[in-house]
Amino acid sequence: MNEVQEALADAFVDILDAFGVPVTIAGLASEQGTANQLRATMSQNDIVLEDADAGFMKSANVDLKFLKSHLPSTLPGFKDPVIIDGESYAVVGVNTKPNSPVIVYECEPA
Image 1: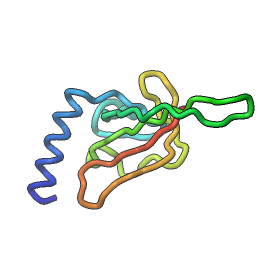
Image 2: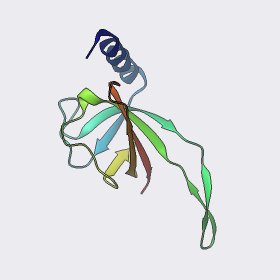
Image 3: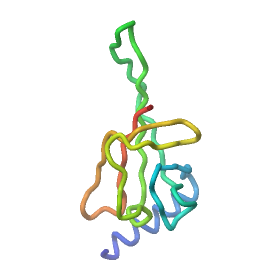
Image 4: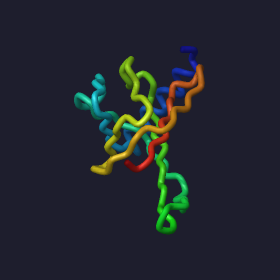
């Protein structure tokens, strides 16, 4: 990492300490937190009303931002279970940039 990336990573650690939420990802082990519990920032997207058989249903996806260095080498995959504050979600997308120290997982209610 260059010094800008290191500064971003250090700042993100401070953000995780202040605003991070505990996230449990089934089957992962990490050096941060307990065996499979990590810290991430969580941003809740707009609640979308989706067409369903009996009318509309709510879809409230969330974005979880992790520091890449806190994740193990085996990352969660599509539809892997994620527990946030006792509620079940599933991974539906991953966003990252090669030079960014942060990775974003989009999760939907399971």
